[in-house]
Image 1 (spheres, rainbow, N blue to C red):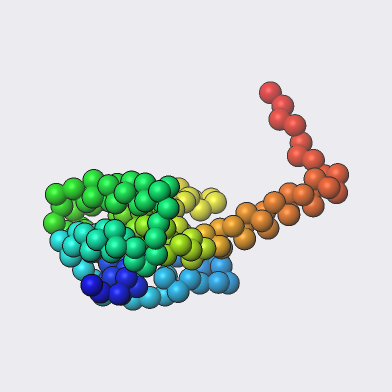
Image 2: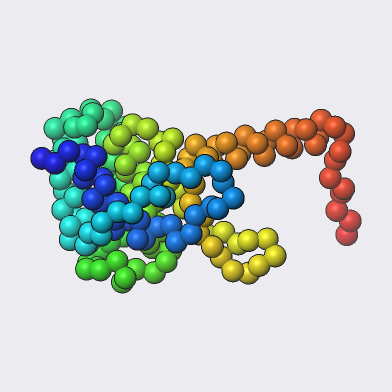
Length: 169
């Protein structure tokens, strides 16, 4: 059986096409996943990847999953297969479905590899002052860092005695 890292790299092509249309350019850190230009695979090839991955997991490769992790693995794979359905081409999916496919694949990879810090998460967001939605992709570690910085900012603001003004009716 192919090395699991190679399997994920090959499978990412379908998923990357579906995921990050735009990445967060304001971040000083750019994930390796967002910089990679993967080779394209078809949906049938991706389904074959999922079959091979399932067989590898059953053999304990790349690592043994706990019962909880095995349940998560099965749930993610079921969601991926349901999302793909009978489609034969990624272009048969709308933007939201492509983004969901990408995020599910990233969750699957993080679970199998046992490290979710480099999991890329993509979200559609509205930019302040605009009605246009853009797709923003960051790693879980970058997201946690943002949350930490935002928490520190609010702690400083509230600690300095600056409180938001109450709303009036």
